[in-house]
Length: 117
Image 1 (cartoon, rainbow, N blue to C red):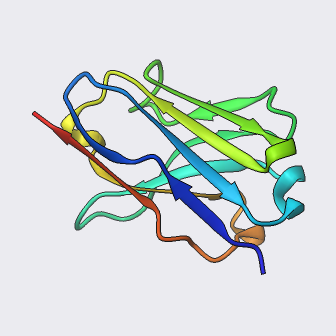
Image 2 (image 1 turned 45 degrees about the vertical axis):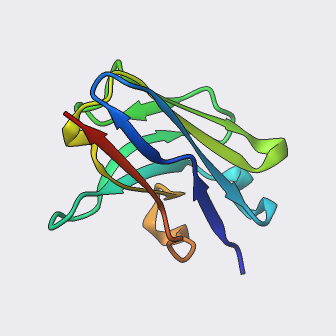
Image 3 (image 1 turned 30 degrees about the horizontal axis):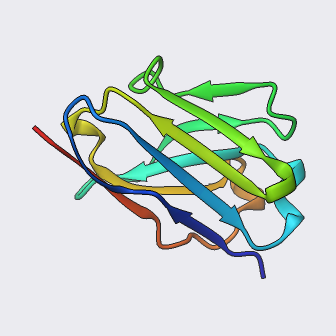
């Protein structure tokens, strides 16, 4: 079964930067639109950004446009999320998975991002 392993989270100050990584254990997802999601305490999981299988098309939630950049390295089965100008409201556990829920793998443990004010 495919596993998705997120990493790269941490504690940063407002305005800081982090780069998250999502590694797939199999190449199964190389043909799918991949996405990052996040879940803050007491809130539902929300979409953050997605990238097409070729990497040529990206989409972002309005709340992160201009600050976050999604990319992928299909050869390494890895999806990245570069986050800049971080705000306290970006604090959440970040997950990756396919954007289309029909093709989702089991959710990983995610990686915690905490932005201090």
